[in-house]
Image (tube, rainbow over all chains, first blue to last red; front, side, top):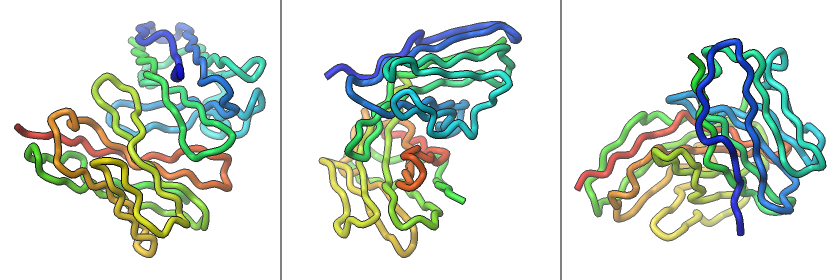
Length: 113
Length: 115
């Protein structure tokens, strides 16, 4: 079974530039999550989708971050414009309708300089 | 407020010995899940073990066991017979089932296994 796919693995941009991350969840998983993990901290939820609807985006900085999940499958997370404090690993995860477990991708490490 | 606390920023253990990583949680929910994930330097989050709040038996998965004490709100991870490959960050997480299923993570514990 293929896992959660994320790209790119690494990205370096200058502040005020824009960047986009892509996630392909495990086939059939209805729920998709984006987490931000700042160095030395645990992951923090940015946004959660159920199929293509948003369940929780309470911690998403909506002035600069946006996310979409078209057709309830792939998802894109965008940052525009990026700030230095956005440097982090962005983790995508998905989970099935039944069962408690979430499956994580390898993450995208973003460095803003 | 929902919160996970891991009080050990770093731990050392000798190879082949057992080690306990501490985790306490705060929730007013009755139904929730507790998880441990391993994060090696490559960055992926690897699922280790799960305990449901209504499970009476402590969960075990191979060398991993979860010491669940509900009254104390603790969910410590025990790794038996440590291996060099166990060196990594370990995160405790909680999933309150009435909040859409998101995971709330602790700050993590860095485990170093010495040969």
